[in-house]
Image 1: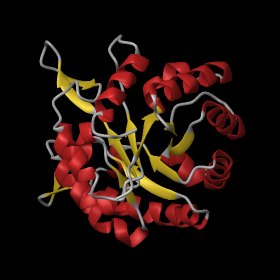
Image 2 (image 1 turned 30 degrees about the vertical axis):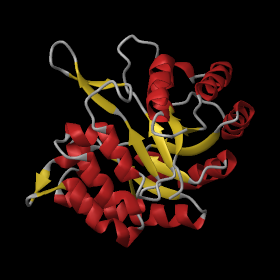
Image 3 (image 1 turned 135 degrees about the vertical axis):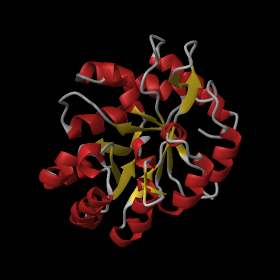
Length: 257
C-alpha cells in the first residue's frame, strides 16, 4: 500500500489564517513541523490563486478542502473553479444541518441533493467526501444513520471522510469503521479524545488521549487512503502549533510523515 501523507486540517489554526500575511507565516510553520499538506478550512477572504501560491512557496500541497453544503448546492461552478486554481483533487462537506438531515427522510433528501453535486465534481476530477461528527451515530430502524449513508454511498460515488474522535464520541469503533469505509476514503481525520479533570470529553493531540492508535493506524494502512489530516478543534489555551508538533512526532514513530 502507498503510505498516506500527513497533513493539517487547517480549522485547527483558524485564528492564524484570516489574512495573507498570517496565512503565509502559518504555512511555513506547518511545513517546518514536518507536515507535507493541508486541508483548507475556515480561511479568511483570500483568493484561491494566492492560497495556492502561498502553499507552493511553503512547500505544501493542498490535499483537500472543506466547503459548506450551501455552497456545494448553490455555488458549485465557482467551487469547482477554485479547486482547479488550488490544484486540489478532493473536497468534503464538514457538516450538514442535523435538523434538516438527521432522519431517514433527511438521508433520502441528502442523497438526492448530493448526486448531481458529486457528478459535476467528478466530471472535473474532484472527489467528494462526507465528514462525520457524533450525531450520525444516532440509530434509526436499528442502524446508525451513518451506516445507512454508507450503504447508499456507492450509488452516488460518495466517499466518507471519517473522523476518529467523533466516531468514539458516537460510541463506535474507529477500526471497524475504517474497515467498512476504507475502500472509498481518500481522506481520514486523525483526532484524539481525552477526559479533563471534570471528566468532560476533550480534543487532544494525537497520542495524548485514549484512542488506540496502534490498531487504528494498522487498519488504515490496509486501505488506499491518500491523506491523514490531523485536527484539534480546541487546544484549550495551549499553542496549537505545539499541539500539532506533538501529534506529528507521535505519528512519526509509526513511520508516517
